[in-house]
Length: 429
Image 1 (tube, rainbow, N blue to C red):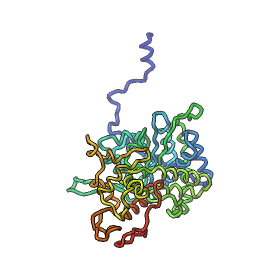
Image 2 (cartoon, one colour):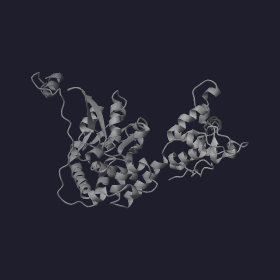
Image 3 (cartoon, helix red, strand yellow):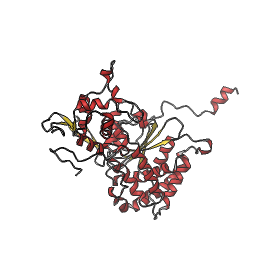
Image 4 (cartoon, rainbow, N blue to C red):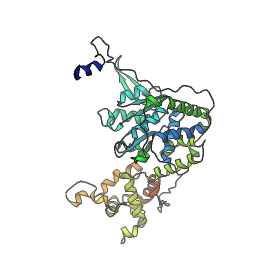
């Protein structure tokens, strides 16, 4: 027998034309844990963390985040707001997909989707009871349907979130589809591909490449499914046992430095950590503090920061002219040309694209658009130095109040003071 004959004899019979092929695909089914009958103690949370550590290389703080986010994903319907989990990396082979798979295998009623359209997403989430894990999401949000998917992801952060579609099968009827779901996703650089709104609604973990001594075994769910289901079902039972305590945790119980939208994002995790105390609270507070410190400036808040600095250092920016209670838009823009950001760059010298310096620089007209979203508008109030001067200008009281309210914590200097104008009184009330 020659080599080719021997090789062919070892192959299985080829598929015949009479064999059926399921060209319609298969239904997507969720992973559901078997019900655990006994009572579960707090030690299960450590067991979950140890299982994560066995398969995923993370810092202790990120293990805490992953462990508690999984707990929240098992009961996300208890919360009005459901933060996403984003696992990102700067390079391939950092273990992001294995980290996401580990989360999925510990989450009850969960789906694993490798290529989701907006329609397939809200078809799965319309019952409001699923956790969805999206692998390599950077490819999904680069597709033509990404606008629909991102809209579903954003609206799904709220318990009453939904998208609408027009049904033309019997006239024209608007139908709505619920999008509320716990969502985890991963992707190289995916944190740079979502917009700022989605970014602030997500808990992020940046994966690092492991040295040889730090590498974990490759996770094969076929062999580990039973073990994960055992730990996951007991973690799920522990969450259910503590339903009332978790639900009773309020935003007022959060650390005071967590404010605004951050309270929505961190509340579910602190609600679970509050049952455990110790390192669980300490690690979350570290992560939340770092998250608050990393809040970035946008065009509008950078303008507020520049004007706040100019007000505080008026003698440097305008040594020959005293500071009034208001400032004309053109005068403010002129002073902002000399303001430097943290990197020593003068951004308002190059605010526009153009050929000449005059074409590039910020002008008074630009400030109207930058400050209007914060409620800062020009007014015709009296000048501090000349009661007859009713010329148009931005009130410093309005600018500094908006700076105190909207700048990230690290930039706030408590600059707001009672306005020194006889026309108005401004307070924080």
